[in-house]
Image 1: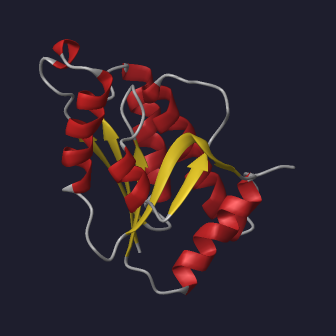
Image 2: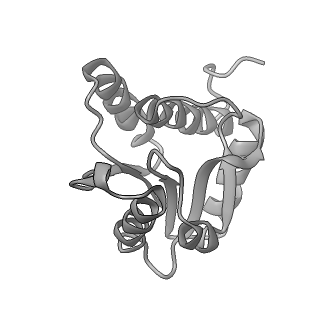
Length: 157
């Protein structure tokens, strides 16, 4: 199964980018994982929030195939524990699914069209984090899920 994380903007913070690459390499030992960083909109400061969300949705939705399962990462989504996330991934692997896409919306959140396309909406936390940091948190949780599934000594309860 191919797992992708689609997000708006580049990871500009060097330490975060290096750690994200570190987890990406670790995850790729278990499954194909890539991060697609869609460039931020030009002149977005002159647009209303709804216009930014809509334009970002256009760019995000172009990257999703019709057979992809889509999980939106959103603070309003369902919170689950790491073991539940691992079980969620395992179910997707067992189903024979080819593509699993996680989406992290822009600074104003996801447009309704992205929410409607999502098969599931998950929250990593009710707290607000910088988007670049959320990428890293998600990658770490994805790696943790794989180590849970393999009974490797990374996850401690």
